[in-house]
Length: 72
Image 1 (cartoon, one colour):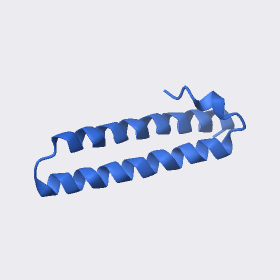
Image 2: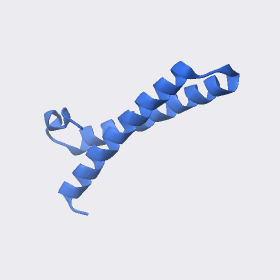
Image 3: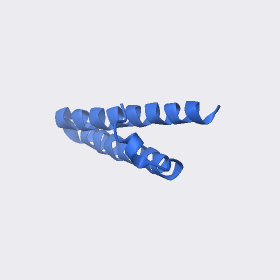
Image 4: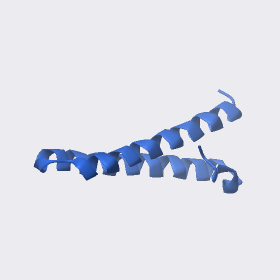
């Protein structure tokens, strides 16, 4: 995998991780009962950690972070 492919893949993973985080928050809004609420909290924390990790990877790998601001 060359650098451009790696960058595109990372960009896509960041986008997907952000969607997962949004979906986890949405699930929490509609969670009913203790088990669903616990699961929703776990999903939010997990999604946030993945998203944060991918962003840190992108920041370390790229000399110009401004290129990444329009991740979509």
